[in-house]
Image 1: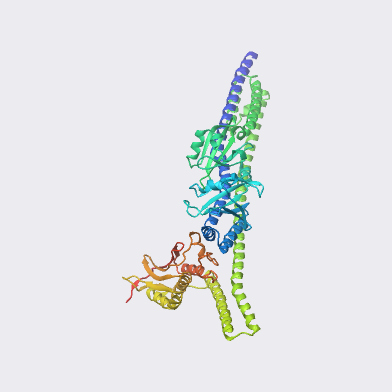
Image 2: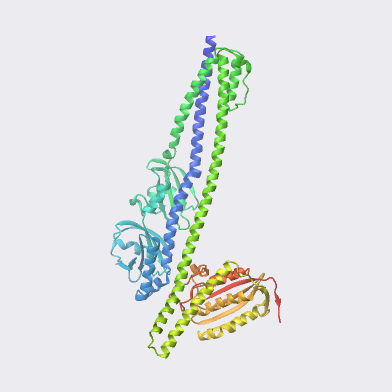
Length: 632
């Protein structure tokens, strides 16, 4: 019996030990592979996306600000005239100072390619650049390259720190007027990366399309090629591919690392991150310890059970062996034989212990499953609550912003004519004026009053349309006749402005009849024609329509100053007015086009425009073609 027990102990013990060790190794390797796959496919990409998104937001904001400054008409005209116009200088420096104050950059600057004067915020001329000064080499290098946007790091003596400069060429790239740009504190890039870095020794670089390092935590690496740090083949593969990629098992500082690269939006730059594999897999050390501990525990329990089972070589032993195998697979619904439970020897005790373990494990698993289900439910509810709270906060913030913007704009627009009325009224009150002066001041007071009434009427009209107090009263309207009436109404005003006002009606159907609200259509036409006359210094204004099924498209074209690309959507916003040195008219509250768009939308149509600076504008608005007839 002892020999059989010993053989059973040795054979089963050896077998169980081998199985537990193999299962532990398989489990450990599978966990390692699964963890690395998850890290490569999800965690590293997600971390880099978070860093890239933050860096992209910072760089795109800086590039956008630099482009706004480089395209500023006053700054371009001032530089084109070699900086001789004091008024243009004041406007250009005011724009530089305004951008610096608004966006809180370290510095905002512009350099004249002719005079080589370096202008900064606070209306200062900081320096005159020289090709003999090594500190000024960045300018001559940048302006000689056919690249509109570049980055460079330089030490700013005034701020006593190294700054990341975003440079944008002004005017024609072949003959630039100069360079405009902003300076960013590199610590912002450090802060954004440290929020997301996956491990202690992870590194991040910002490189250009040629692989040159534009930013690194190690300052001495800046302006060096990344191939001096990583392999040339790896760098070439990264710069030639615009997709998000993970390069596994690379060498960096004699360590195996994972390398991830991603484009920074449309800036032409890439973010490259390396993370040591041994730091990414620190959790495996814990898994290894738990696996070894659990294996030893299982081996101890198994040998104890084998010792008890080996005392009686019989069918109960086989039965208990079978039951133990089922339990190890997680099948806790197996019924324990009543014969085994009734035994009073070791086998009976073992049967009772197995039965109790079965119930406890089943109860524990059921409790864990229920707890997991409850936790998932609570997490979903918490996410939903947080989402609703964020939406409510965003909505409240936007409402507050719009309210403040409206009050600020309307107070400014009303204050201007009111100041004129009060000022000229006080002059009249003093007396001692001849009849001509009295008539002149009275006319100014009446004009300011009319301007105030126009502002109030526009606000009331917009409010009525927004509140849906005004409903379109549709009837049959002859579009050709409506355009002819508008032409007669504004003919005198156009002649006084020295403009030619004409109409363009289709020859095959000059009188088109549709069902719409004639008052609203006439109001939109008045706004568009009035604006065209005001903002056209010379040339002509043309009114017409064309049938673009299933709608009638009415247009007002002028040969005026035109509208820049970046302002073509903003001009339809309340209180927005173009700011340009070519303006021939100053006045109004910027409500006309906003009202026109709301009226057109109420009629079921759309309003749009085509324009280019100094090439005129064409405003279109459509009316649904519910019914169109040819009228005699």
